Length: 408
Image: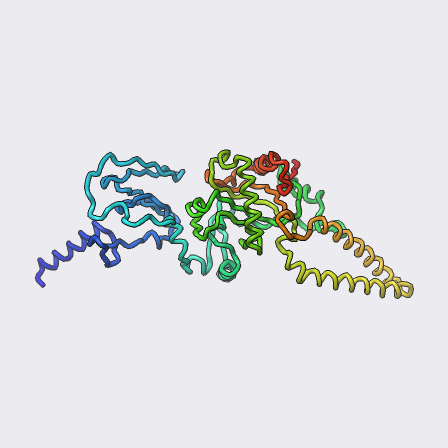
């Protein structure tokens, strides 16, 4: 091979790279090189906006977006409005150049977006090893490697479809342990703590003693597929704080979520918020609904055994109390504790009842988390409470939908 031929081949590779970028080494049905989909492997924190690869519609994929929608080929001219991340497009007046590869695919477009299709495949490197999560308020939070593996196992074995899990509530932040005898917490100490920390306003709300539930409702299956990439025929879900399905019974879940959807229809919620879906944070009652089988199979037996043992121990202390002052003092303590236990049981029964049918369930929403218009994390708690109240009070005959009272 002479020098001119080598230079010619080298310039050809440069020309191909300039025209097509990095390729896979394959060609498509039109004889054109297939470009390497680098965006699918992109894991950078910076947002990348690019073009020169005409696509019918601009789509986000791993913080990248291709806004080349083939205007010269008769498609559209697309612009990205930043930082709003809104797309604006105008159709091309005509086809200025006929492309070798048609801009519109021959086959019907995929039901999923590029990101949704990409998310169906788990890249193990994305979830293993030590990770750092950037947050707005707490800066970077480290997730140790061992925690990541444990979370992956739990999510893979027990979690609902991850595409539904757009929000996982944090656990509650309790006040410090009370110094009052026999109490875990005391309101006066809680207010003193907030005052010491410089918190000027405190909102406290009624505790329904339910279980934390996140409810997502779409108008129909098409909305669930388009917005969340869910293609299993679902349009609604109710899950726990840890991402598990709330209900063991699919029929009970379907009936409950149908009620929520019907309530949204009656309220005109879709038009009010200009949305086809919503996500709410709520308490679902009774508390025992989530753990009904666990209570029956494990806790009930443990509780019964404990009460029987407590009674026998108290009886033995009664017999020995007359002979030893220390034993008498212990007996009195046991009696006091026994009365407290009876009080706890009586209070507990007010929040637990058997769940046999849909009418045994009650829902108390307290946060409107998101709609198609956006998330509402920047709204204060009173705004959320007012939205929740506006969704409950207009339907007086829906006894299963509970209001939540609050004070400042």
